[in-house]
Image (cartoon, rainbow, N blue to C red):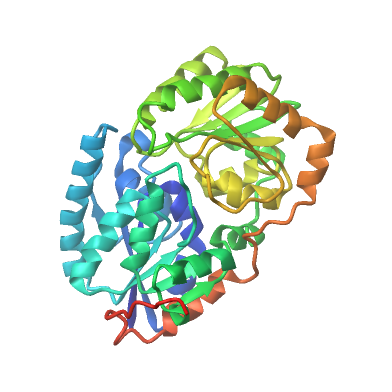
Length: 384
């Protein structure tokens, strides 16, 4: 019985992992383990561990770590608490393989602890580049502490190999989120409106904006620029609130204040959850902000993305993505372009570079059967 342990810290990454977790659960020779941490356990961020339990999963360990602040000091202290908590969790669970996704700081803590327990790590979505966030350094650090790698494009696979990882352990499987979308039954318009208690308008924007973590104290000014630009449109606005990054609470306060003054056309959520978020993409006209979803998932819905600032700088893009600087006039111009019939037509026929068939099955085949006995001692692979 191979014990495969999934670590999840946010609503978004759990949504991406959930189908793979169910697939593991259904294999007789595999034992699913789940560790929930960070935002999942915070009342401020919606106690989203309940979504995991509502989906029928049993959470084996909850690792508390998040301090109620978003300063660099509090985040570093949270990371320290997390490593302590994972020491106990790994000692009790004794997993054979850990699965992590992405590049958030709680994954760095989970993988760092696994290194000292000699537990192999399977990393999903390595090889990306996001030059505006410290996630970039975290992602590559996780790559060096991982043993199996599942990238979403061939370009990213080559980058992981460039970091010294053996080609035989690096698999280009496509985006796990896009594989999920093809198999989900999304909400129809009436059911979606009922689920968010909000009526959509003639035009609708879905807005997610996170702090650019390699910049200091720019979040408030940049988000003010975004609000001024969208306020000039006649669109109804659906905000999803940012993660527990530095300066995230400033954005949350601004969203709450804006929505309180515009209840006729704006609504905000700590977490839409995966089903409601993807369902929203069927009915909005443009996705606005700087979330990775605007780059990776949104193009598959055939709608434009207005990507603001440097947070996603370096990622491969479909031609449905409009990049602009975080200032009111460029954001306004980008929205006008996105609303134009010509660009909407272009977006509706875009090719998503992250899309491949059977991503979940490909990952499952590897993590269920790849030999783990001698995987811990890695050889650095030098490029020819």
